[in-house]
Amino acid sequence: MKIYQKTWFIILMLFALPPVGIILMWTGKKFNKIIRIILTVFFSFVTLFDILLFTIDTNETANNSEISTTEISSVAETTIKSNTTQMVDKLSEDAKNDAKTATDADIEKALNYLNSNVDKCFEDNKIMENFIYYGALLNYKFEDSDKRSKIGFQALKTVKYVYRGVESKTDEVTIDNVKQLKEMLNDYFAKSTDNESTSKQETSSKSATNATKEATAASTTTKKQTTTQNAPKGDGRTVYTAPTGKRYHFDPDCGGKNSSATSLDDALSRGLTPCQKCAS
Ligand SMILES: [Zn+2]
Image (cartoon, rainbow, N blue to C red):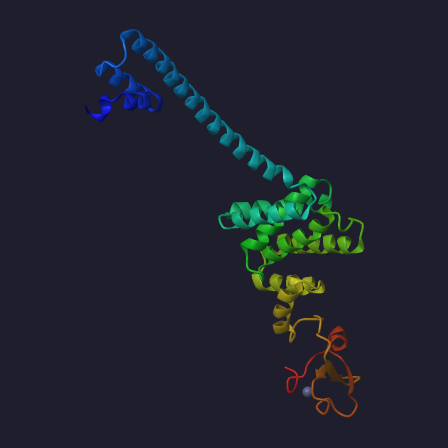
């Protein structure tokens, strides 16, 4: 007798794999015909029931995973609230990614937007968010020395603290920032047809007042220009000047017997230029 003809095996199959069990039961002529019919009907139902359960179960699992992914993405979107650092970061991050593919038209749009909305840049969240986004876009798109990058940085800096509620739009620093941004935009739009290098020089000396990345970038440019440009900020070092002299000296002996010590800032603010022998 083969194993598949044994009663215990057929019963086992009826439970484990009902279709196989049923076939073996009929081909092996196990039990009498009535019992075979009853068992066939019973295990057919069991099988159908199993298939049904399995189908429902799979569908539910599929639905559940769909629900959970939509929930996750909507949670991620709703957790970033307006007027938060997270929103500023998200806008900056978006701008950083978009900067890689931004076209000339996108840049022009960004600059025009900043220029035409600078007077109402704190009016509502939408405008402030646009300023943050466009500002970051320009800042990421161009080298730090490019005036469009500087405009972008200034726009971002001007708006983001007010947007987050850290500063108010009536604070002195904010008013000053807006003023600077306006000057930079006016300069950019007025001079955009002029000689590139003259407008670049003016932008960099104008923006040299803020102790930020802005200032760092500007001062590196202005250092080279101190021979011809007026009144950039010094770095606090001591220089020697004579009451009637037009130069300042690093060497106290070079300035002559009438010279006295003063700060480089002071010398620069008086419009003095570096001595060709000891200070250039
Ligand atoms: Zn000298």
